[in-house]
Image 1: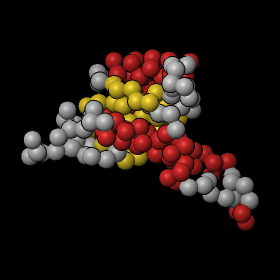
Image 2: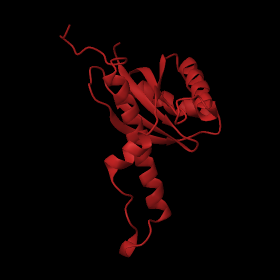
Image 3: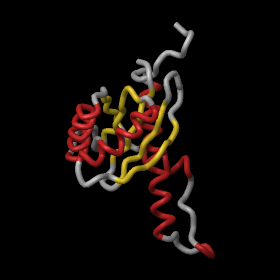
Image 4: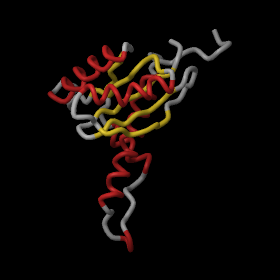
Length: 158
């Protein structure tokens, strides 16, 4: 595959987005976007990123139940991913995302404390959650890259 890949961590309020450019062997957190009230709004927001980064494939986190079953959240994510891929004209891979947010929080460390060591402010909590979403998207995409499913060959390498 040529072109870039986007990793998406779908949430009820936000979508964490990560990018792996053409030939990149690693994913990096990119941005967190708010969920739209409709699929149309989500498509519009993601379409701009797809064009800007020359994206040719999507990897969407699949929130399987702890036992591996496809519960309501996984079914909803799969439906959203299929519709998104169809609307954007891009192939979509679904990747097990169990524990991706936990792994992201481990990478980022604890949520920052508020002033004078008190509890974090609502703004601090929101910013931290957005960082976790982006990092989780990078973990999802990196897992897919490591599995060799979306990695494109580096130029000059057979």
